[in-house]
Image 1 (cartoon, helix red, strand yellow):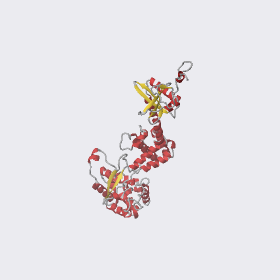
Image 2 (image 1 turned 180 degrees about the vertical axis):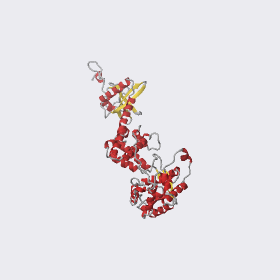
Image 3 (image 1 turned 135 degrees about the vertical axis):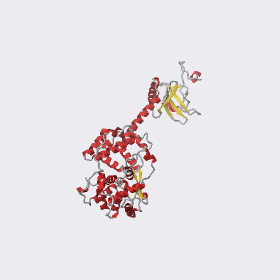
Image 4 (image 1 turned 90 degrees about the vertical axis):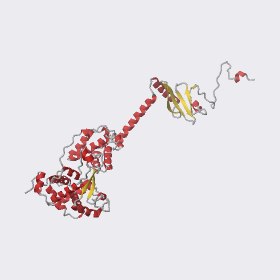
Length: 469
């Protein structure tokens, strides 16, 4: 007969012996345990509970959490200012027990110092995000990207100057200084932009250098004010521009390339182009007889903008972040005849100034070349008063000079040539369209061109230049 004490697990020496728990027996989660892989494998969530914890006897605060779905992870639990702090260490499949104990000890030391590991973790995350943001800004918010976004915004606003911005910065920034082009815009200095301008000046292109400064300054200013101007696209905020480096750069003093043609020159030009046949001559006549409107705007004229005896152009020059200025231009009789001649060829298309039946508009450069070509046929001589090279842009300033000489008021000239208006009274209260007085001004100008009722002597006296004998 087997002794009873053997069945009860008592040794022959009289010492008690604890029986090893079975692998499928439930763990007593109210006690701490010398955590092993085997115990973790046996850990299950009691029925009716969402989660349960197995506490480690070697590392105070270390637990293994199991959920009712069977997920298991190492967690740390402690108290800070009487508040329970619990932080997840990681999945039990990715962490060794000893590594989890080391991590738990670190968290416990942090709590002992009175620091919240959650706050420290947030700071680490924020620091990593900041590094990520800076890397993204360095890659995506460069000087070249800023100028491209600025050009896109000009294009969105309907301003044709966007193509000039792209062309200048492709040549003088992207192609000539790739390192500066890739520099984060927020780190670009005024000295770097000045050096960019200097390269253009060294090539003898001072005016291009001035445009580099002007376009850069406008782009940086757009980015700088993006956070407080709701009309600026939100992408510009990403450049984090707090200071406009180009604002410090001294503006270049340029010679006036819009040196006006003298009235006598305009008359000679008119006497030549009024005899030209074909669409080119008709377009040149419309340009002159409407006051020398900005060529770039005139070339974009749509047939839908034509009225019975006038047309509408939209001038965005000098209106950064604003819609283009609407200007109704009257058509006097000879200009109306020229328009009709043009539209017989382009009425089926969108554009008025076109040689493709209105499908596409002619370029401003092509139009300027037409004017220059026509002027080259004139027998200019020193006595005519033409100083310097004939340029189409001189027509506009020449018309302004001629109208001033004909005593057309400055305000009327401003409305006719789309210079815009200033002052609260003019902008907010004056709703007069000035169409009839603009028409009168153009008719007076035409009479001079035809030498009908205005003397050259009067024009010369008003313009301050003597006429030839």
